[in-house]
Length: 443
Image (tube, rainbow, N blue to C red; front, side, top):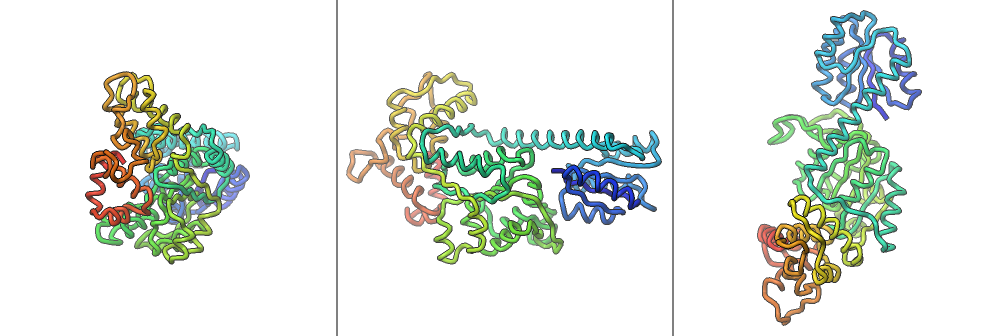
């Protein structure tokens, strides 16, 4: 659905254009002057704006530049009853996408709207593809023979086309971010932006700013305006990873946005609206967090409309083999190597390993093996020491090196801990040391 703004000082023109566009399912706002136009554009995201060349004593050409400065992605169509080659050239020079002379026919209007909608959609797809290329992640397949994973895929397909909030649950590394993006791609919002915010990765103030935006000078370090992810994901999907770590002070603001689609930027009293679908993920038991006072009950119920539970990778050894194969092809192509699969002993180790880090850990293991490979097949010697020794069954006193025992113990603690801070406390090391150990062992 297109969001359209009409700026014309003639009330009959405004009404005619509104009726035409609303009959085609577009969301439409109509105003008579530049000041109101800029105010509407500040409150809401528009895809397309029709601007009259003469707005009383104002020039519509001046508004073209102001609108594009405020909303660089917007498509501007200048309309006028005083058409001339000079004004058309000047409109295009100032950034307008098209120019229509009054009176125009419904067919002319339809043609302009369709063309600009296609251009806008193409630009968004290119931006999304560029973002995907920058991530450099292998594709995750959802072909599986396991009922637990089949239920995940079936439910995801069912809810993708709805507007419902979805809560993804599962251990760290099970592919919640990938599934969120897949839900977006399967939905009617696929051509609109998909944004990701990791709730544990930012301080309270920066997290609120990243989510809702801020205005210049609203806090120390706010040297310029930040529109926020809610604004930039207009019409699309915003994925909130590890929502269980969202600070209590931000939770009512998120609840209000989910319920009313309204929010304010930090330091700004202007109430804004946005059409953004929320998908959240957590590896915590949110109902337990509610009982212990760390998560709002009303927000929990708003998030938990549709719940999808992702099973751990260790429960799906056949899927491990399939995922490992697709990842091998991806990283082999990236490294310009010709690899022909896995040796039997390596494949057996992959299938029997406990995978506490799930898909994320598998990805790291396969990438490491490809980088170190010197032959056309991945052998057991290219896998981490913990896998060679069947680390999932390691016990104290086994004839193993301290390194293998340490790696196995760190993996187990990370798999069971609720956060990196808790894991570091249980291990008796600081988080910087834990980070180095994770990097060392490819966790």
